[in-house]
Length: 310
Length: 283
Image 1 (cartoon, rainbow over the protein chains, first blue to last red):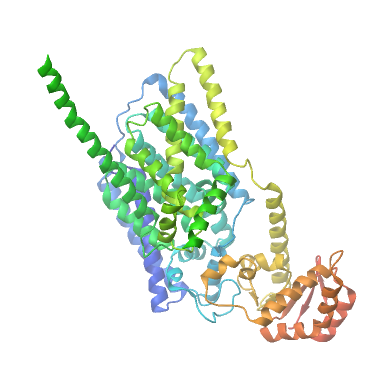
Image 2 (image 1 turned 120 degrees about the horizontal axis):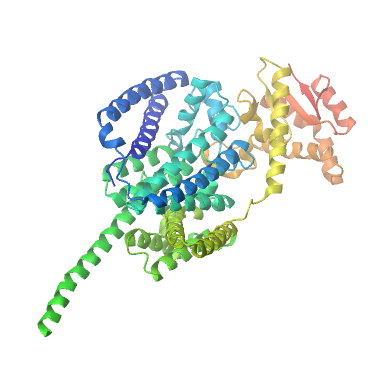
């Protein structure tokens, strides 16, 4: 598999957006900027990122957009098309499910109220999102520095979309699609030469997300019922991509994932699930390689012994 | 530490009790190992197995719970397990194998296997979950949005500080961020208190309890002693609320007429009807 595909570039772009939102958010928190200034700063940074991204894509287009050699026999293409169509229908059904908004889970979460309070008070955490009154004791810094409310609030300010609609419907739809992008990359890493199995893999993921929509903490539940949360983005996008990067041994992307998680989710001093998963999988891969190396070393020895006996 | 161990043990019991996705992962891993189909991605599958084992065993689950900070519940340690990825890998290997042969008989068998597997995966969840609870919640949300919309329309430009039944306050700030409250959703959803050091004073707690009685008084029945205490403290609670900044009182329309009259005299204003509610305003 190529080192960086278009899918990788899209996820890198998303992480770039999260990083810029974090930078603007921190600037506003520590310099006490108004939310209007914060979203303006974020817009300017985004413009630069977009220009850079387009530049990189144009410059490396041959490398990024070149289609990998098809390893699928012509007869299997029809089957793959049918599987992709079924997969597409499942994804559409999930998008409709999110759009209907019948299973929004907001217990323990105050994202919409926070975005509303940013927009109304034109400041970051100037009022308690739960009441709209000024804070009496304040809030923990570890939560104050997380950037998603600024990202969603800025999108609301630029587009005029109501926070509840953007946060509870549009963002989860975008996160779900990104998640399939990340799982597609994981599928490519798991089945580098078998396109047919990759489609089955994606189908399996889509069925599992539906099945997992039953309970708090499951990936399906996070993506379908509360896809705006940092934990949903981590579980649905960052972690599958981290695993695919580990399997492909593309290390810089993993650092981006760790940083993005620290910007969105309260972690143990930045050491979140992405770091743990990357470290765990890397160690396991090293262990397996060492094991297979020993087995390979032993094989010629055994062969030599047998040869000697003959 | 004992509490953490208990949480880890009980957490796993809850996790496997509420759904069978972890079981599905274990079945996928067993299938891949015992059919020799795990060779190509041995590292990935070994990692999935080891990380799942670490989440199941309390001895290893506790350090993971400490690592993820105590802010999160037990189920979040499963984040590090590639549950969906590994189970989908097993799904892909199994079904791609089933559909490999092109003759009609094999395809018929593969179709049956696919249907059975998808059904089994569906049964690992709860097939729609608590639909009744969700429908009730959606109806409440719809009503709250409608009431808040009516308030904003009737009093444009006013800075409303609202005291209303719990199902309205639940969505009030989400529906319109300009509305202020003397107590919010974090009073009954305690997990939200992790987001701020602020706490509610005694008066806010008494007001919350009193509003609960007001809601009950509009219903069919409420305990007599609660009813008495509600009426005995009506003026005091109203005064407290006004002192805390409330300028808009929203009660269910079915509250006793004695309450409406005493509220009108306590606030020096008359009640207005707003859908299924009555409103007292101080502006």
